[in-house]
Image 1 (cartoon, rainbow, N blue to C red):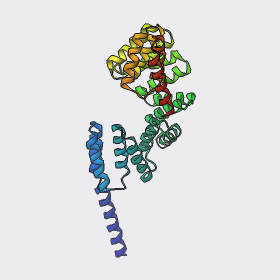
Image 2 (cartoon, rainbow, N blue to C red; image 1 turned 45 degrees about the vertical axis):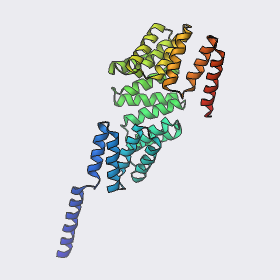
Image 3 (cartoon, rainbow, N blue to C red; image 1 turned 180 degrees about the vertical axis):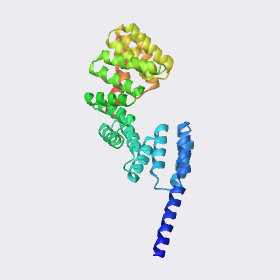
Image 4 (cartoon, rainbow, N blue to C red; image 1 turned 30 degrees about the vertical axis):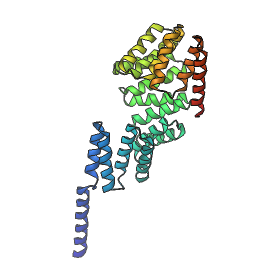
Length: 296
Protein backbone atom coordinates (compact mmCIF):
# COMPACT_ATOMS: atom_id res chain seq x y z
CA UNK A 1 0.00 0.00 0.00
CA UNK A 2 2.78 2.39 0.95
CA UNK A 3 4.58 1.60 -2.28
CA UNK A 4 1.43 2.32 -4.25
CA UNK A 5 0.86 5.64 -2.49
CA UNK A 6 4.48 6.64 -2.98
CA UNK A 7 4.21 5.81 -6.68
CA UNK A 8 1.04 7.87 -7.07
CA UNK A 9 2.59 10.79 -5.23
CA UNK A 10 5.67 10.63 -7.45
CA UNK A 11 3.52 10.46 -10.57
CA UNK A 12 1.49 13.45 -9.42
CA UNK A 13 4.66 15.42 -8.72
CA UNK A 14 6.03 14.64 -12.17
CA UNK A 15 2.78 15.78 -13.78
CA UNK A 16 2.86 19.06 -11.85
CA UNK A 17 6.47 19.62 -12.87
CA UNK A 18 5.68 18.83 -16.49
CA UNK A 19 2.80 21.30 -16.56
CA UNK A 20 4.85 23.94 -14.78
CA UNK A 21 7.81 23.58 -17.14
CA UNK A 22 5.71 23.81 -20.31
CA UNK A 23 7.23 23.06 -23.70
CA UNK A 24 10.86 23.76 -24.50
CA UNK A 25 9.68 25.90 -27.42
CA UNK A 26 7.37 28.17 -25.39
CA UNK A 27 9.78 31.09 -25.06
CA UNK A 28 10.75 31.07 -28.75
CA UNK A 29 7.09 30.90 -29.82
CA UNK A 30 6.26 33.83 -27.53
CA UNK A 31 9.14 35.88 -28.94
CA UNK A 32 8.14 34.98 -32.49
CA UNK A 33 4.57 36.16 -31.88
CA UNK A 34 5.82 39.41 -30.33
CA UNK A 35 8.13 40.08 -33.29
CA UNK A 36 5.29 39.39 -35.74
CA UNK A 37 3.00 41.81 -33.90
CA UNK A 38 5.68 44.51 -34.22
CA UNK A 39 6.06 43.79 -37.94
CA UNK A 40 9.62 42.41 -37.62
CA UNK A 41 8.91 39.37 -39.77
CA UNK A 42 12.54 38.29 -40.28
CA UNK A 43 12.99 38.08 -36.51
CA UNK A 44 9.65 36.30 -36.20
CA UNK A 45 10.74 33.63 -38.70
CA UNK A 46 14.06 33.22 -36.86
CA UNK A 47 12.29 32.74 -33.53
CA UNK A 48 9.83 30.24 -34.98
CA UNK A 49 12.78 28.38 -36.58
CA UNK A 50 14.29 28.10 -33.11
CA UNK A 51 10.99 26.92 -31.65
CA UNK A 52 10.76 24.18 -34.30
CA UNK A 53 14.37 23.16 -33.63
CA UNK A 54 13.55 22.80 -29.95
CA UNK A 55 10.25 21.03 -30.55
CA UNK A 56 9.46 19.81 -34.11
CA UNK A 57 5.94 18.83 -32.93
CA UNK A 58 4.88 22.35 -31.89
CA UNK A 59 1.98 23.26 -34.19
CA UNK A 60 2.01 26.84 -32.88
CA UNK A 61 5.49 27.42 -34.29
CA UNK A 62 4.57 26.14 -37.75
CA UNK A 63 1.37 28.22 -37.72
CA UNK A 64 3.25 31.35 -36.64
CA UNK A 65 5.99 30.87 -39.22
CA UNK A 66 3.38 30.18 -41.90
CA UNK A 67 1.65 33.44 -41.01
CA UNK A 68 4.97 35.32 -41.21
CA UNK A 69 5.76 33.74 -44.59
CA UNK A 70 2.34 34.84 -45.85
CA UNK A 71 2.99 38.41 -44.79
CA UNK A 72 6.39 38.42 -46.56
CA UNK A 73 4.82 37.03 -49.75
CA UNK A 74 6.45 33.59 -49.58
CA UNK A 75 3.16 31.82 -50.20
CA UNK A 76 4.35 28.31 -51.03
CA UNK A 77 6.34 28.12 -47.78
CA UNK A 78 3.31 29.50 -45.94
CA UNK A 79 1.06 26.71 -47.22
CA UNK A 80 3.68 24.07 -46.37
CA UNK A 81 4.00 25.32 -42.78
CA UNK A 82 0.28 25.75 -42.25
CA UNK A 83 -0.39 22.25 -43.57
CA UNK A 84 2.19 20.87 -41.13
CA UNK A 85 0.56 22.83 -38.29
CA UNK A 86 -2.77 21.23 -39.16
CA UNK A 87 -1.22 17.76 -39.38
CA UNK A 88 0.11 18.25 -35.85
CA UNK A 89 -3.05 19.93 -34.55
CA UNK A 90 -6.16 19.36 -36.70
CA UNK A 91 -8.17 21.64 -34.38
CA UNK A 92 -6.09 24.75 -35.08
CA UNK A 93 -8.74 27.18 -36.39
CA UNK A 94 -6.19 29.94 -36.97
CA UNK A 95 -4.11 27.74 -39.27
CA UNK A 96 -7.19 26.83 -41.33
CA UNK A 97 -8.06 30.51 -41.62
CA UNK A 98 -4.60 31.62 -42.76
CA UNK A 99 -4.28 28.72 -45.20
CA UNK A 100 -7.72 29.68 -46.52
CA UNK A 101 -6.31 33.15 -47.18
CA UNK A 102 -3.46 31.56 -49.12
CA UNK A 103 -5.77 29.47 -51.29
CA UNK A 104 -8.00 32.52 -51.86
CA UNK A 105 -5.02 34.57 -53.05
CA UNK A 106 -4.14 31.70 -55.39
CA UNK A 107 -7.75 31.76 -56.68
CA UNK A 108 -8.32 28.18 -55.50
CA UNK A 109 -11.82 28.97 -54.33
CA UNK A 110 -12.97 25.47 -53.35
CA UNK A 111 -9.92 24.84 -51.18
CA UNK A 112 -10.26 28.29 -49.62
CA UNK A 113 -13.94 27.75 -48.82
CA UNK A 114 -13.19 24.33 -47.31
CA UNK A 115 -10.50 25.76 -45.03
CA UNK A 116 -12.62 28.72 -43.92
CA UNK A 117 -15.50 26.33 -43.24
CA UNK A 118 -13.24 24.29 -40.94
CA UNK A 119 -12.08 27.50 -39.27
CA UNK A 120 -15.61 28.67 -38.39
CA UNK A 121 -16.62 25.12 -37.40
CA UNK A 122 -13.80 25.02 -34.86
CA UNK A 123 -14.23 28.67 -33.85
CA UNK A 124 -17.79 29.94 -34.48
CA UNK A 125 -16.61 33.45 -33.49
CA UNK A 126 -13.90 33.61 -36.14
CA UNK A 127 -14.53 36.99 -37.77
CA UNK A 128 -11.64 36.44 -40.21
CA UNK A 129 -13.06 33.03 -41.12
CA UNK A 130 -16.47 34.39 -42.13
CA UNK A 131 -14.92 37.41 -43.85
CA UNK A 132 -12.50 35.29 -45.89
CA UNK A 133 -15.12 32.73 -46.82
CA UNK A 134 -17.43 35.53 -47.92
CA UNK A 135 -14.77 36.83 -50.32
CA UNK A 136 -14.12 33.32 -51.63
CA UNK A 137 -17.85 32.72 -52.17
CA UNK A 138 -18.05 36.07 -53.97
CA UNK A 139 -15.17 35.16 -56.30
CA UNK A 140 -16.80 31.77 -56.95
CA UNK A 141 -20.05 33.50 -57.94
CA UNK A 142 -22.05 32.39 -54.87
CA UNK A 143 -23.11 35.91 -53.98
CA UNK A 144 -25.97 35.14 -51.58
CA UNK A 145 -23.66 32.99 -49.45
CA UNK A 146 -21.04 35.72 -49.67
CA UNK A 147 -23.44 38.35 -48.31
CA UNK A 148 -24.48 36.02 -45.49
CA UNK A 149 -20.86 35.46 -44.42
CA UNK A 150 -19.88 39.14 -44.54
CA UNK A 151 -23.03 39.96 -42.57
CA UNK A 152 -22.08 37.35 -39.95
CA UNK A 153 -18.60 38.87 -39.66
CA UNK A 154 -20.17 42.31 -39.11
CA UNK A 155 -22.55 40.90 -36.49
CA UNK A 156 -19.56 39.46 -34.62
CA UNK A 157 -17.60 42.70 -34.91
CA UNK A 158 -19.53 45.78 -36.14
CA UNK A 159 -16.24 47.71 -36.39
CA UNK A 160 -14.58 45.20 -38.73
CA UNK A 161 -13.93 47.49 -41.70
CA UNK A 162 -12.85 44.78 -44.16
CA UNK A 163 -16.22 43.06 -43.81
CA UNK A 164 -17.95 46.36 -44.57
CA UNK A 165 -15.93 46.88 -47.75
CA UNK A 166 -16.29 43.18 -48.63
CA UNK A 167 -20.07 43.28 -48.36
CA UNK A 168 -20.16 46.65 -50.13
CA UNK A 169 -18.35 45.10 -53.08
CA UNK A 170 -20.75 42.16 -53.19
CA UNK A 171 -23.80 44.43 -53.06
CA UNK A 172 -22.23 46.38 -55.93
CA UNK A 173 -21.95 43.14 -57.93
CA UNK A 174 -25.60 42.39 -57.16
CA UNK A 175 -26.64 45.86 -58.32
CA UNK A 176 -27.91 46.80 -54.84
CA UNK A 177 -26.19 50.16 -55.00
CA UNK A 178 -27.87 51.83 -52.03
CA UNK A 179 -26.79 48.98 -49.74
CA UNK A 180 -23.29 49.06 -51.22
CA UNK A 181 -23.10 52.82 -50.62
CA UNK A 182 -24.21 52.39 -46.99
CA UNK A 183 -21.45 49.84 -46.35
CA UNK A 184 -18.74 51.99 -47.93
CA UNK A 185 -19.96 55.06 -46.05
CA UNK A 186 -19.73 53.15 -42.78
CA UNK A 187 -16.28 51.80 -43.69
CA UNK A 188 -15.05 55.35 -44.33
CA UNK A 189 -16.59 56.53 -41.06
CA UNK A 190 -14.74 53.77 -39.23
CA UNK A 191 -11.46 54.40 -41.08
CA UNK A 192 -11.28 57.73 -42.93
CA UNK A 193 -7.82 56.84 -44.27
CA UNK A 194 -8.79 53.57 -45.96
CA UNK A 195 -8.06 54.08 -49.66
CA UNK A 196 -9.84 50.85 -50.62
CA UNK A 197 -13.15 52.13 -49.22
CA UNK A 198 -12.98 55.35 -51.24
CA UNK A 199 -12.12 53.34 -54.33
CA UNK A 200 -15.10 51.02 -53.79
CA UNK A 201 -17.47 53.90 -53.19
CA UNK A 202 -16.12 55.61 -56.28
CA UNK A 203 -17.18 52.57 -58.29
CA UNK A 204 -20.70 52.77 -56.86
CA UNK A 205 -20.93 56.49 -57.65
CA UNK A 206 -19.77 55.73 -61.19
CA UNK A 207 -22.57 53.18 -61.64
CA UNK A 208 -25.03 55.76 -60.28
CA UNK A 209 -23.72 58.22 -62.92
CA UNK A 210 -22.63 60.61 -60.15
CA UNK A 211 -19.36 61.20 -61.95
CA UNK A 212 -18.12 64.20 -59.95
CA UNK A 213 -18.46 62.25 -56.70
CA UNK A 214 -16.87 59.20 -58.29
CA UNK A 215 -13.91 61.28 -59.43
CA UNK A 216 -13.54 62.84 -55.97
CA UNK A 217 -13.46 59.41 -54.31
CA UNK A 218 -10.89 58.03 -56.75
CA UNK A 219 -8.75 61.14 -56.26
CA UNK A 220 -8.91 60.66 -52.50
CA UNK A 221 -8.01 56.96 -52.79
CA UNK A 222 -4.96 57.88 -54.87
CA UNK A 223 -3.98 60.65 -52.46
CA UNK A 224 -4.11 58.17 -49.58
CA UNK A 225 -2.30 55.44 -51.52
CA UNK A 226 -0.42 56.68 -54.62
CA UNK A 227 0.55 53.08 -55.49
CA UNK A 228 -3.03 51.79 -55.56
CA UNK A 229 -3.27 50.53 -59.16
CA UNK A 230 -6.98 49.75 -59.09
CA UNK A 231 -7.81 53.33 -58.07
CA UNK A 232 -6.13 54.64 -61.24
CA UNK A 233 -8.01 52.02 -63.23
CA UNK A 234 -11.30 53.06 -61.63
CA UNK A 235 -10.62 56.74 -62.28
CA UNK A 236 -9.83 55.94 -65.92
CA UNK A 237 -13.35 54.49 -66.18
CA UNK A 238 -14.87 57.81 -65.14
CA UNK A 239 -12.72 59.58 -67.75
CA UNK A 240 -13.76 57.09 -70.42
CA UNK A 241 -17.38 57.87 -69.52
CA UNK A 242 -16.83 61.56 -70.34
CA UNK A 243 -14.61 60.71 -73.36
CA UNK A 244 -11.48 62.23 -71.84
CA UNK A 245 -9.38 59.69 -73.73
CA UNK A 246 -5.91 61.18 -73.25
CA UNK A 247 -6.28 61.50 -69.50
CA UNK A 248 -7.78 57.99 -69.29
CA UNK A 249 -4.74 56.64 -71.15
CA UNK A 250 -2.44 58.27 -68.61
CA UNK A 251 -4.28 56.67 -65.67
CA UNK A 252 -4.26 53.27 -67.35
CA UNK A 253 -0.54 53.49 -68.04
CA UNK A 254 0.08 54.27 -64.35
CA UNK A 255 -2.12 51.33 -63.32
CA UNK A 256 -0.18 49.01 -65.64
CA UNK A 257 3.17 50.28 -64.34
CA UNK A 258 2.03 49.54 -60.79
CA UNK A 259 0.44 46.17 -61.59
CA UNK A 260 1.43 44.74 -64.99
CA UNK A 261 -0.38 41.43 -64.40
CA UNK A 262 -4.02 42.50 -64.73
CA UNK A 263 -5.40 41.87 -68.23
CA UNK A 264 -8.33 44.25 -67.72
CA UNK A 265 -5.96 47.22 -67.61
CA UNK A 266 -4.54 46.36 -71.03
CA UNK A 267 -7.98 45.66 -72.51
CA UNK A 268 -9.34 49.07 -71.52
CA UNK A 269 -6.17 50.82 -72.67
CA UNK A 270 -6.53 49.01 -76.00
CA UNK A 271 -10.04 50.49 -76.29
CA UNK A 272 -8.73 53.96 -75.40
CA UNK A 273 -5.85 53.68 -77.85
CA UNK A 274 -8.26 52.77 -80.64
CA UNK A 275 -10.29 55.87 -79.81
CA UNK A 276 -7.10 57.92 -80.03
CA UNK A 277 -6.18 56.33 -83.37
CA UNK A 278 -3.18 54.52 -81.94
CA UNK A 279 -3.90 51.26 -83.67
CA UNK A 280 -0.49 49.61 -83.21
CA UNK A 281 -0.56 50.33 -79.48
CA UNK A 282 -4.15 49.07 -79.27
CA UNK A 283 -3.21 45.80 -80.96
CA UNK A 284 -0.20 45.36 -78.66
CA UNK A 285 -2.33 45.97 -75.56
CA UNK A 286 -5.00 43.51 -76.66
CA UNK A 287 -2.40 40.84 -77.40
CA UNK A 288 -0.86 41.37 -73.96
CA UNK A 289 -4.29 41.06 -72.33
CA UNK A 290 -4.95 37.82 -74.23
CA UNK A 291 -1.60 36.35 -73.14
CA UNK A 292 -2.31 37.20 -69.50
CA UNK A 293 -5.77 35.65 -69.64
CA UNK A 294 -4.46 32.41 -71.17
CA UNK A 295 -1.40 32.28 -68.94
CA UNK A 296 1.02 32.26 -71.90
